Length: 287
Length: 219
Image (cartoon, rainbow over all chains, first blue to last red; front, side, top):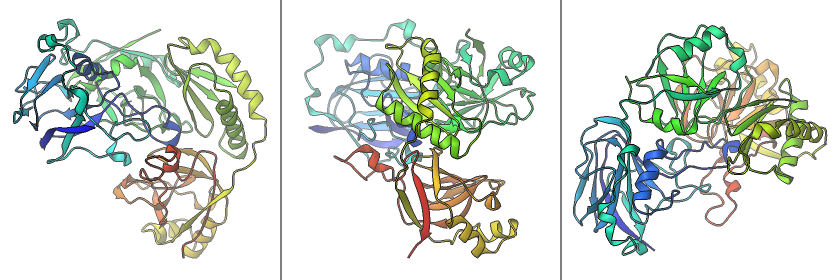
């Protein structure tokens, strides 16, 4: 049984239900989706004793507003959107409270978890919404979010004091160098192009979304490298003809014909996800 | 068979040098073998025209590269088997696409000739990609090979039958798209409501990798 717990008053710049993603459907053209910053999403769930696979709501930057339809425990993590509830710790929402994310101070994606977990329709084994592919839709004004009715009274008495250890709270304005493994077409690139990629700071482009993050800087000078379309994994550093990298993100295409210089360490994809347009990032080769 | 690491958890194997009938047959045989006897720790495999990706669970197989040579040999062996062809799926199509006249002019063919040539072959689903269930179909008549539009349309509606380079395909959801639209099918190639809630998830996808397709006139 599910019961209504929040009403969306305003989805802000974009809000979707996400979990850890959809596994096993790439060969049908379905990308994994899932929370862009799985580090933050996982902490939101962990604060509330929810299993890691539990759906959360992911908000893009600022603007979202939700009204609590009943009293419940919540956890907000991820980007700092100047929420009117404390972040990275358990908070109480009373019936009628309006939770808002009015500004964006750092990071890109905000996560909201609720005790028991948000209900999301499971399609192909996951509740992760992938609107572009027709798997669910983004949240809209008036939508009602629900959670299991059995969620109450299950959390221990001390839950109110729970907070994420400060070493786990990330400063999204200062991402560490992002670790990159060699990609399938590593050998197609010249030594100087590879050095060029790792030696410079790249700027995250405003043309970045759940599909891919584009990077701006001095383009690689590679000639045209033509490959037959092949499978693409999340975190791949693709170099299109203009020499400016595109990092495949969680709603990105499952196959592609751009050469892949490298692939980000899975844990560092969540760091890149929280890098706002204009921020500079560096990459580090893992051997 | 050549292979390369693709990050710490995945391997990419190249089972053919170029796209075509031989590659298609090898791919189907390899996929059949992987489905019957998945290697330990395999999370997911993704076949494409000449390559196949195998992704592993780090808890079961922390270093997939250790097993790569053995897997390559195994796939080489499997690839020569003959897998019986699947039945042909008929797709009704109305040749009323907005790019059809321009494509016919560019190919120096009449509109009727384009339609006849497009309807003639039995196509193969080389891979699904771009959007859920979107089939990259070969082998398209070389006389119809046409580059993608210089700038993609913001919206192409689901069911649009189109030509992009050496492939023909069918848009499965309303999405931006750069292929030349030559017609439309009333069939829903991808339908998230099909099969649910109790049917098999695969029922959402009308076409699967390795399937065969024939376009027929819509009535």
